[in-house]
Every structure is written in structure tokens, then in C-alpha cells.
Amino acid sequence: MGIHKFFTSLNDLERIIRAPGRFKFEEHNVAAHSWKVSQYALFFATIEERAGETIDWKSLYEKTINHDFAEVFIGDIKTPVKHSSPELKEMIAKVEEGMMEKFIIREIPEEFQEVFFDRMKEGKDATIEGRLLEMADKLDQFYESFAELKRGNADKEFVAMYRIALKKLLALPLKASVTYFREVMLDDVINEDTIIDIKEITRAVLED
Image: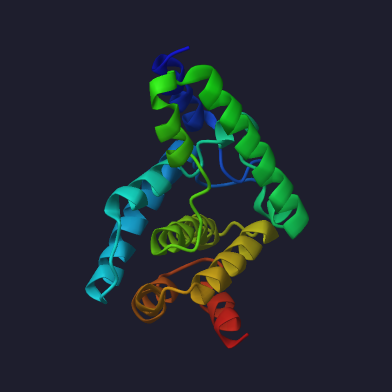
């Protein structure tokens, strides 16, 4: 038992490909995803802070960096499957939680286990840091699907991913961040040259 096992397991995150089983112009792995999520959260936390919110930056970084570590055990499950029902999503979360708990007990030195239990717990909660994590996670799904549609990947799963991510981003209870995304970033998105008509897909979601 030792921290060595945890550190070597991080390499596995580089080999877990997101949205598996579909043709993609650009492959994305879980390790890169976690880093991007941290960057998105950093930016939107800055927006929220400037709007008057108090941000626990330590909590935010811990939530974003660690939020998908449990995929070391089960890999990345396709978004339509994972979100096909609340019951299935809850079952998957319980499996991840159980495997994470066993890993910490088995591999993490006892004097650090309490810290790891706290850092590795589900980060998407009612706190503003939890909501920022959820926004950042959805934003990466948004950008990954956008990149495929931009280059002409007509796979209907990426159209669905784009719509789902956009709807969830717009519905999040983060007023300053969502306003900035909708009024500034989304305008840049729909004005890019894309092979598939992103503007039409986006407008359909906004009008829904």
C-alpha cells in the first residue's frame, strides 16, 4: 500500500478515451478533460466572484481536478447510456463511489485516507463550487461535440451531445456565468464557419 499506486494509476486516465465507440476527428482522453474542466471552472469562478459571490478556490480546484478519477475503474460510459434514466445514473454513481472507497482503503496510506475520502467524493453538489464544476464539465462536452460538428462529423450522437450540453448549460443556476456564456461566448460559437449548421441547431435549442 502506498501513494505510488495512486500516482501510477493517473497514467490510466490518459488511455481512457471519451465518447468511445464513435468515429471522431479528434480523440479526447479523461486526463486532458479534467485539466480543461479546471481551466473552464477557473474562468467562470472569476466571473462569479466579480459578480459578488464568495469562491472557495481550494474546494473548486479539488473538485475539478478529481471529478473523473473514478473512471480509472469503469472507463467512460457513453453519454446517452449514462443519462438514459435517473435510476441508471444513480446506480453507476454508487458503483464508482464503492470502487473509489475500496481503492482508498487498499492503496492510500492510512494517515492520508480521510483527506482522500473528502477530495474524491462527488463534487457536483449544491455549493457554488459544485455548480461551477457541473458547468465546466458540460462546457467540455459542448466543445468536444462542437469540434466534431464543425469539421462535418454527421454522427447523430454528437448533434445530441451538443443539444444536451447546451440545454444544461443554459439552465444552470449560475446567473453571471450563464449570462456571459449566452451573450458573449455563444455568439462567437454560432459565427464560426462550420460544415454542419451549428447556428441552426443552436437557435432551435434557444427557441425551445
